Image 1 (cartoon, rainbow, N blue to C red):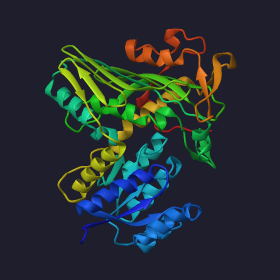
Image 2 (cartoon, rainbow, N blue to C red):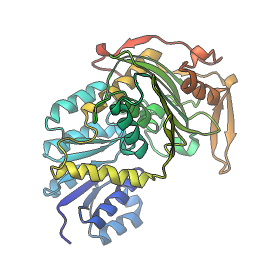
Image 3 (cartoon, helix red, strand yellow):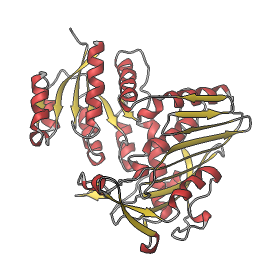
Length: 401
Protein backbone atom coordinates (compact mmCIF):
# COMPACT_ATOMS: atom_id res chain seq x y z
CA UNK A 1 0.00 0.00 0.00
CA UNK A 2 1.36 3.42 -0.93
CA UNK A 3 0.93 6.12 1.70
CA UNK A 4 0.75 9.79 0.95
CA UNK A 5 2.19 11.07 4.22
CA UNK A 6 5.26 9.92 6.14
CA UNK A 7 5.23 10.90 9.80
CA UNK A 8 8.01 11.30 12.32
CA UNK A 9 7.61 10.99 16.07
CA UNK A 10 9.81 12.60 18.71
CA UNK A 11 9.19 10.84 22.03
CA UNK A 12 8.00 7.22 21.98
CA UNK A 13 7.12 6.70 25.65
CA UNK A 14 4.51 8.27 27.89
CA UNK A 15 1.90 10.05 25.79
CA UNK A 16 3.93 8.98 22.74
CA UNK A 17 2.42 5.52 23.16
CA UNK A 18 -1.06 6.91 22.41
CA UNK A 19 0.34 8.78 19.41
CA UNK A 20 1.84 5.57 18.03
CA UNK A 21 -1.46 3.75 18.49
CA UNK A 22 -3.33 6.52 16.65
CA UNK A 23 -0.80 6.43 13.82
CA UNK A 24 -1.28 2.67 13.53
CA UNK A 25 -4.99 3.30 12.96
CA UNK A 26 -4.18 5.91 10.29
CA UNK A 27 -1.95 3.38 8.56
CA UNK A 28 -4.81 0.87 8.47
CA UNK A 29 -6.88 3.57 6.76
CA UNK A 30 -4.11 4.08 4.22
CA UNK A 31 -3.77 7.79 5.02
CA UNK A 32 -0.34 8.01 6.63
CA UNK A 33 2.31 5.91 8.30
CA UNK A 34 4.96 6.25 10.97
CA UNK A 35 8.33 6.30 9.22
CA UNK A 36 10.76 7.37 11.94
CA UNK A 37 11.02 7.68 15.72
CA UNK A 38 13.52 9.66 17.78
CA UNK A 39 13.93 8.95 21.48
CA UNK A 40 17.15 8.82 23.52
CA UNK A 41 15.60 6.34 25.96
CA UNK A 42 14.78 3.65 23.40
CA UNK A 43 17.97 1.75 24.19
CA UNK A 44 16.63 1.31 27.72
CA UNK A 45 13.48 -0.27 26.29
CA UNK A 46 14.99 -2.75 23.84
CA UNK A 47 11.71 -4.62 23.18
CA UNK A 48 10.16 -1.40 21.87
CA UNK A 49 13.17 -0.59 19.71
CA UNK A 50 13.10 -4.10 18.29
CA UNK A 51 9.38 -3.87 17.62
CA UNK A 52 9.80 -0.60 15.73
CA UNK A 53 12.70 -1.90 13.68
CA UNK A 54 10.77 -5.09 12.84
CA UNK A 55 8.04 -2.87 11.38
CA UNK A 56 10.65 -1.05 9.27
CA UNK A 57 10.29 2.12 11.32
CA UNK A 58 13.62 3.93 11.47
CA UNK A 59 14.88 4.61 15.00
CA UNK A 60 17.17 7.48 16.02
CA UNK A 61 18.81 8.48 19.32
CA UNK A 62 17.87 12.15 18.98
CA UNK A 63 15.55 14.34 16.94
CA UNK A 64 18.29 16.29 15.14
CA UNK A 65 19.69 13.07 13.70
CA UNK A 66 16.20 12.01 12.62
CA UNK A 67 15.43 15.31 10.90
CA UNK A 68 18.75 15.32 9.06
CA UNK A 69 18.34 11.69 7.94
CA UNK A 70 14.66 11.88 6.94
CA UNK A 71 14.20 14.75 4.44
CA UNK A 72 10.96 13.31 3.04
CA UNK A 73 8.90 13.49 6.25
CA UNK A 74 5.56 15.24 5.76
CA UNK A 75 5.02 16.11 9.42
CA UNK A 76 6.50 15.50 12.85
CA UNK A 77 4.75 14.86 16.14
CA UNK A 78 6.45 16.26 19.24
CA UNK A 79 5.39 14.13 22.21
CA UNK A 80 8.22 15.01 24.57
CA UNK A 81 8.22 16.72 27.98
CA UNK A 82 7.08 20.34 27.77
CA UNK A 83 10.50 21.97 28.43
CA UNK A 84 11.71 20.66 25.04
CA UNK A 85 8.70 21.86 23.02
CA UNK A 86 9.95 25.33 22.07
CA UNK A 87 13.35 24.22 20.81
CA UNK A 88 11.99 21.23 18.88
CA UNK A 89 9.13 23.18 17.30
CA UNK A 90 11.52 25.88 16.11
CA UNK A 91 13.76 23.26 14.53
CA UNK A 92 10.91 21.46 12.76
CA UNK A 93 9.50 24.71 11.38
CA UNK A 94 12.96 25.68 10.15
CA UNK A 95 12.94 22.47 8.10
CA UNK A 96 9.55 23.38 6.63
CA UNK A 97 7.65 20.60 8.41
CA UNK A 98 4.10 20.55 9.61
CA UNK A 99 4.02 19.92 13.37
CA UNK A 100 1.65 18.10 15.69
CA UNK A 101 2.65 19.50 19.10
CA UNK A 102 1.33 17.65 22.13
CA UNK A 103 -0.31 19.86 24.75
CA UNK A 104 0.54 22.02 26.58
CA UNK A 105 2.44 24.01 23.92
CA UNK A 106 5.03 25.85 26.05
CA UNK A 107 5.13 27.08 29.66
CA UNK A 108 5.64 30.83 29.10
CA UNK A 109 3.95 33.51 27.01
CA UNK A 110 7.19 34.84 25.50
CA UNK A 111 8.03 31.35 24.24
CA UNK A 112 4.59 31.03 22.67
CA UNK A 113 4.72 34.45 21.01
CA UNK A 114 8.15 33.65 19.57
CA UNK A 115 6.81 30.45 18.01
CA UNK A 116 3.72 32.25 16.68
CA UNK A 117 6.00 34.75 14.93
CA UNK A 118 7.98 31.89 13.33
CA UNK A 119 4.91 29.85 12.35
CA UNK A 120 3.69 32.34 9.75
CA UNK A 121 1.73 29.67 7.84
CA UNK A 122 -0.03 28.29 10.91
CA UNK A 123 1.46 24.82 10.40
CA UNK A 124 1.62 23.87 14.08
CA UNK A 125 -1.34 21.97 15.47
CA UNK A 126 -1.45 21.91 19.28
CA UNK A 127 -2.90 18.62 20.49
CA UNK A 128 -5.63 19.63 22.86
CA UNK A 129 -7.57 16.56 21.76
CA UNK A 130 -10.53 17.25 24.05
CA UNK A 131 -11.58 20.09 21.73
CA UNK A 132 -12.57 17.40 19.21
CA UNK A 133 -14.68 15.39 21.66
CA UNK A 134 -18.37 14.80 21.04
CA UNK A 135 -19.41 16.85 24.09
CA UNK A 136 -17.23 19.84 23.13
CA UNK A 137 -18.53 19.73 19.55
CA UNK A 138 -22.12 19.66 20.81
CA UNK A 139 -21.61 22.53 23.25
CA UNK A 140 -19.87 24.66 20.63
CA UNK A 141 -22.77 24.06 18.25
CA UNK A 142 -25.34 25.10 20.85
CA UNK A 143 -23.32 28.19 21.71
CA UNK A 144 -23.07 29.15 18.02
CA UNK A 145 -26.80 28.70 17.61
CA UNK A 146 -27.42 31.00 20.58
CA UNK A 147 -29.28 28.27 22.42
CA UNK A 148 -27.87 29.33 25.81
CA UNK A 149 -28.86 32.94 25.27
CA UNK A 150 -26.37 35.21 27.01
CA UNK A 151 -23.74 33.03 28.66
CA UNK A 152 -23.37 34.09 32.28
CA UNK A 153 -20.52 31.88 33.41
CA UNK A 154 -18.33 28.90 32.54
CA UNK A 155 -16.86 26.83 35.36
CA UNK A 156 -14.67 23.74 35.47
CA UNK A 157 -13.00 21.57 38.05
CA UNK A 158 -11.50 18.19 38.85
CA UNK A 159 -9.74 16.21 41.55
CA UNK A 160 -7.27 13.85 39.92
CA UNK A 161 -5.17 12.27 42.70
CA UNK A 162 -1.49 11.75 41.86
CA UNK A 163 0.82 9.67 44.01
CA UNK A 164 4.57 9.14 44.51
CA UNK A 165 4.89 7.06 41.34
CA UNK A 166 3.52 9.92 39.25
CA UNK A 167 6.00 12.41 40.63
CA UNK A 168 8.95 10.00 40.50
CA UNK A 169 8.39 8.94 36.89
CA UNK A 170 10.38 11.77 35.26
CA UNK A 171 12.93 14.46 36.07
CA UNK A 172 10.51 17.25 35.19
CA UNK A 173 7.49 16.10 37.22
CA UNK A 174 6.55 18.66 39.84
CA UNK A 175 9.33 21.03 38.74
CA UNK A 176 9.25 24.72 37.84
CA UNK A 177 12.47 24.61 35.80
CA UNK A 178 15.37 22.34 34.88
CA UNK A 179 18.82 23.54 33.81
CA UNK A 180 17.42 26.94 32.96
CA UNK A 181 14.48 25.60 30.94
CA UNK A 182 11.01 26.53 32.27
CA UNK A 183 8.66 23.64 33.07
CA UNK A 184 5.86 24.94 35.34
CA UNK A 185 4.41 21.46 35.84
CA UNK A 186 1.10 21.05 37.66
CA UNK A 187 -2.56 20.11 37.17
CA UNK A 188 -3.54 23.31 35.32
CA UNK A 189 -0.41 23.24 33.16
CA UNK A 190 -0.28 19.54 32.36
CA UNK A 191 -2.81 16.81 33.21
CA UNK A 192 -5.84 19.12 33.36
CA UNK A 193 -4.66 21.79 30.92
CA UNK A 194 -7.48 20.62 28.64
CA UNK A 195 -10.02 22.23 30.96
CA UNK A 196 -8.60 25.74 30.60
CA UNK A 197 -8.25 25.40 26.84
CA UNK A 198 -11.83 24.09 26.64
CA UNK A 199 -13.05 27.19 28.49
CA UNK A 200 -11.28 29.38 25.91
CA UNK A 201 -12.97 27.37 23.14
CA UNK A 202 -16.45 27.57 24.64
CA UNK A 203 -16.18 31.28 25.47
CA UNK A 204 -16.09 32.18 21.76
CA UNK A 205 -19.31 31.75 19.79
CA UNK A 206 -17.68 31.42 16.36
CA UNK A 207 -17.30 27.93 14.90
CA UNK A 208 -13.54 27.63 15.31
CA UNK A 209 -12.73 30.59 17.55
CA UNK A 210 -11.04 30.78 20.93
CA UNK A 211 -11.51 33.64 23.38
CA UNK A 212 -8.62 35.32 25.18
CA UNK A 213 -9.12 36.63 28.73
CA UNK A 214 -8.10 40.14 29.75
CA UNK A 215 -7.66 39.56 33.48
CA UNK A 216 -7.18 36.70 35.91
CA UNK A 217 -7.06 36.07 39.64
CA UNK A 218 -5.37 32.85 40.69
CA UNK A 219 -4.33 30.86 43.73
CA UNK A 220 -1.54 28.24 43.50
CA UNK A 221 -0.77 25.83 46.34
CA UNK A 222 1.32 22.79 47.10
CA UNK A 223 0.65 20.04 49.60
CA UNK A 224 3.46 17.82 48.30
CA UNK A 225 6.87 19.37 48.90
CA UNK A 226 7.79 19.93 45.28
CA UNK A 227 9.09 22.95 43.36
CA UNK A 228 5.85 23.55 41.52
CA UNK A 229 2.19 23.38 42.60
CA UNK A 230 -0.32 20.55 42.89
CA UNK A 231 -3.48 22.59 43.55
CA UNK A 232 -4.93 25.66 41.85
CA UNK A 233 -8.02 27.77 41.37
CA UNK A 234 -8.65 30.85 39.28
CA UNK A 235 -11.18 33.34 38.03
CA UNK A 236 -10.80 35.06 34.71
CA UNK A 237 -12.63 37.68 32.69
CA UNK A 238 -13.04 38.05 28.95
CA UNK A 239 -13.42 41.37 27.14
CA UNK A 240 -17.16 40.66 26.81
CA UNK A 241 -17.50 40.67 30.61
CA UNK A 242 -18.04 36.89 30.77
CA UNK A 243 -16.28 35.37 33.78
CA UNK A 244 -14.97 31.85 34.25
CA UNK A 245 -13.76 29.89 37.27
CA UNK A 246 -11.67 26.75 37.51
CA UNK A 247 -10.34 24.57 40.35
CA UNK A 248 -8.01 21.59 39.93
CA UNK A 249 -5.86 19.45 42.21
CA UNK A 250 -3.71 16.35 42.53
CA UNK A 251 -3.79 16.53 46.35
CA UNK A 252 -6.93 14.60 47.32
CA UNK A 253 -7.30 10.92 48.07
CA UNK A 254 -10.66 10.64 46.33
CA UNK A 255 -11.14 11.40 42.67
CA UNK A 256 -13.73 13.81 41.31
CA UNK A 257 -13.83 13.41 37.51
CA UNK A 258 -13.72 16.65 35.58
CA UNK A 259 -16.83 18.78 35.35
CA UNK A 260 -17.56 21.73 33.06
CA UNK A 261 -20.66 23.82 33.70
CA UNK A 262 -22.13 26.49 31.41
CA UNK A 263 -25.00 28.70 32.53
CA UNK A 264 -26.81 31.07 30.19
CA UNK A 265 -29.93 33.22 30.28
CA UNK A 266 -31.87 30.55 28.35
CA UNK A 267 -30.34 27.29 29.47
CA UNK A 268 -27.52 25.35 31.11
CA UNK A 269 -25.27 22.37 30.44
CA UNK A 270 -22.93 20.24 32.55
CA UNK A 271 -20.25 17.85 31.35
CA UNK A 272 -19.28 15.30 33.99
CA UNK A 273 -17.63 11.91 34.54
CA UNK A 274 -14.52 12.99 32.58
CA UNK A 275 -16.56 13.78 29.47
CA UNK A 276 -18.74 10.67 29.49
CA UNK A 277 -21.97 12.50 30.37
CA UNK A 278 -23.54 15.72 29.04
CA UNK A 279 -26.67 16.95 30.82
CA UNK A 280 -28.46 20.11 29.77
CA UNK A 281 -31.72 21.97 29.58
CA UNK A 282 -32.34 19.98 26.41
CA UNK A 283 -31.71 16.46 27.59
CA UNK A 284 -29.03 13.96 28.49
CA UNK A 285 -26.30 12.52 26.27
CA UNK A 286 -23.84 9.77 27.14
CA UNK A 287 -20.55 9.25 25.34
CA UNK A 288 -17.97 6.49 25.40
CA UNK A 289 -14.94 8.06 23.76
CA UNK A 290 -11.54 6.64 24.58
CA UNK A 291 -8.24 8.53 24.61
CA UNK A 292 -7.15 6.69 21.48
CA UNK A 293 -10.38 7.58 19.67
CA UNK A 294 -9.88 11.26 20.50
CA UNK A 295 -6.25 11.05 19.41
CA UNK A 296 -7.20 9.37 16.14
CA UNK A 297 -9.82 12.05 15.43
CA UNK A 298 -7.21 14.74 16.08
CA UNK A 299 -4.85 13.13 13.59
CA UNK A 300 -7.60 12.80 11.00
CA UNK A 301 -8.27 16.53 11.29
CA UNK A 302 -4.53 17.25 11.12
CA UNK A 303 -4.27 15.17 7.94
CA UNK A 304 -7.26 17.03 6.52
CA UNK A 305 -5.16 20.18 6.89
CA UNK A 306 -2.15 18.53 5.26
CA UNK A 307 -4.35 17.48 2.34
CA UNK A 308 -5.78 20.98 1.92
CA UNK A 309 -9.29 19.96 2.96
CA UNK A 310 -9.09 22.33 5.92
CA UNK A 311 -7.84 25.90 5.63
CA UNK A 312 -6.46 25.92 9.19
CA UNK A 313 -5.54 23.52 11.94
CA UNK A 314 -8.15 22.98 14.66
CA UNK A 315 -5.99 24.47 17.41
CA UNK A 316 -3.13 26.69 16.29
CA UNK A 317 -0.42 28.24 18.43
CA UNK A 318 -2.38 31.53 18.34
CA UNK A 319 -5.43 29.69 19.67
CA UNK A 320 -3.53 28.77 22.84
CA UNK A 321 -2.61 32.32 23.90
CA UNK A 322 -5.60 32.46 26.22
CA UNK A 323 -4.50 29.26 27.94
CA UNK A 324 -0.86 30.33 28.37
CA UNK A 325 -1.80 33.85 29.49
CA UNK A 326 -4.22 32.42 32.06
CA UNK A 327 -1.67 30.07 33.61
CA UNK A 328 1.08 32.71 33.60
CA UNK A 329 -1.33 35.20 35.14
CA UNK A 330 -2.30 32.68 37.82
CA UNK A 331 1.32 32.43 38.95
CA UNK A 332 1.73 36.21 39.07
CA UNK A 333 -1.59 36.71 40.82
CA UNK A 334 -0.76 34.11 43.45
CA UNK A 335 2.62 35.78 44.00
CA UNK A 336 4.31 32.41 43.73
CA UNK A 337 3.16 29.13 45.25
CA UNK A 338 1.69 28.92 48.73
CA UNK A 339 2.68 25.98 50.94
CA UNK A 340 -0.29 24.35 52.65
CA UNK A 341 0.47 23.85 56.34
CA UNK A 342 1.21 20.33 57.57
CA UNK A 343 -1.75 20.50 59.96
CA UNK A 344 -4.07 20.47 56.92
CA UNK A 345 -2.35 17.57 55.10
CA UNK A 346 -2.90 13.86 55.63
CA UNK A 347 -0.73 11.24 54.01
CA UNK A 348 -2.31 8.06 52.65
CA UNK A 349 -1.46 4.90 50.74
CA UNK A 350 -3.66 3.49 48.02
CA UNK A 351 -4.38 -0.14 47.16
CA UNK A 352 -1.03 -0.36 45.36
CA UNK A 353 0.77 0.94 48.46
CA UNK A 354 1.54 4.15 46.57
CA UNK A 355 1.72 7.25 48.75
CA UNK A 356 -0.23 10.46 48.26
CA UNK A 357 -1.52 13.51 50.11
CA UNK A 358 -5.03 14.61 50.99
CA UNK A 359 -5.74 18.23 51.99
CA UNK A 360 -8.50 18.92 54.49
CA UNK A 361 -11.75 19.93 52.71
CA UNK A 362 -10.00 20.34 49.33
CA UNK A 363 -12.24 17.78 47.63
CA UNK A 364 -15.27 19.81 48.72
CA UNK A 365 -13.56 23.11 47.84
CA UNK A 366 -13.06 22.11 44.21
CA UNK A 367 -16.72 21.16 43.88
CA UNK A 368 -17.76 24.41 45.57
CA UNK A 369 -15.81 26.46 43.02
CA UNK A 370 -17.72 24.74 40.21
CA UNK A 371 -21.01 25.18 42.06
CA UNK A 372 -20.75 28.79 43.28
CA UNK A 373 -17.74 30.27 41.50
CA UNK A 374 -15.95 31.05 44.76
CA UNK A 375 -12.19 30.67 44.90
CA UNK A 376 -10.68 28.73 47.80
CA UNK A 377 -9.87 31.86 49.82
CA UNK A 378 -13.40 33.17 49.26
CA UNK A 379 -14.70 29.92 50.72
CA UNK A 380 -12.59 30.65 53.82
CA UNK A 381 -10.72 27.37 53.64
CA UNK A 382 -8.26 27.48 56.56
CA UNK A 383 -5.21 26.84 54.37
CA UNK A 384 -6.14 29.30 51.60
CA UNK A 385 -4.75 32.78 50.89
CA UNK A 386 -6.32 35.54 48.81
CA UNK A 387 -4.68 36.92 45.69
CA UNK A 388 -4.77 39.96 43.42
CA UNK A 389 -6.25 40.52 39.95
CA UNK A 390 -3.71 40.61 37.12
CA UNK A 391 -4.20 42.54 33.87
CA UNK A 392 -3.18 40.02 31.22
CA UNK A 393 -2.67 42.72 28.59
CA UNK A 394 0.43 43.76 30.52
CA UNK A 395 2.06 40.31 30.45
CA UNK A 396 4.59 39.98 27.64
CA UNK A 397 7.04 37.74 29.46
CA UNK A 398 7.36 35.77 32.66
CA UNK A 399 10.49 34.67 34.48
CA UNK A 400 10.62 31.43 36.44
CA UNK A 401 13.43 31.19 38.97
